[in-house]
Length: 324
View 1 (cartoon, rainbow, N blue to C red):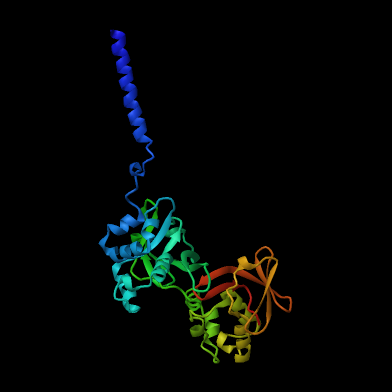
View 2 (view 1 turned 90 degrees about the horizontal axis):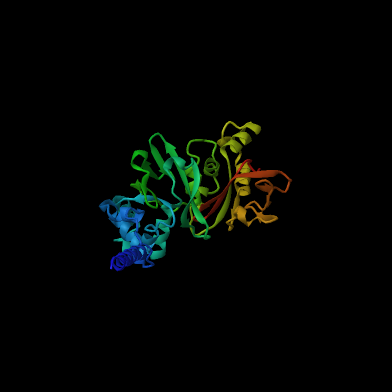
């Protein structure tokens, strides 16, 4: 009799343990614990981001930002920023924005990977948005000054209010909606602190308003942007005190040598070599040799020191020499 009672206890214990194990290993998705502090849930639970929440839902990006399979960093425009964007573009509400356009704008506010603001460079990073001329990811210029972090010198994150750590990345509040950058935007934001800038060279031309031309989102260009150091060296070598001392004929030749029309030339396209024609008619031979380079018709070698800055209407390659 004692043996039977002991056996019954053992059987009951076995059944109980089996139930616990089966519950713990259920394949039913309803049993999976979903983190409740994702980027998407944070936005949903903060009324200051209600317009952003609606936009994410409309584009199905809410599910992307609710998943913990990938990590992201988002620059989150508040309601005021989003409503200003709608007003400036004559949209009554978020549903008036064409769906693909809205999705691309939102993707431009998202970075792949989880990064603190201190981990971003004073320079270019890539977003998840794409341009008009290719499916390449758009670039973004970031910089830090004092207690503020800037995106394209357009939107500001107060550092003490940023770096909100969530289950699938970081959220940084911004009060300005990010526009999709043109070539002109990047030429201006990256060289605002110097008179020896390629934007200044373009501005000195009396034949055409190049900065306006390079803002055209229906066109496509590759720009070989001479670095500030390259321009300073050119001025010194030619005994010019400033850019406005360069004769207009020389200036025009420089500009035409640095513009490649109707091309979005990225360094990934270089195999053995890639030959393109500048606006001046000069042949430029792109090739790889311990980094991307350009060989001119006079055999001079130009180094591309910052490659593939992608704008909506083309790409910028920063080079270490002025092409005369």
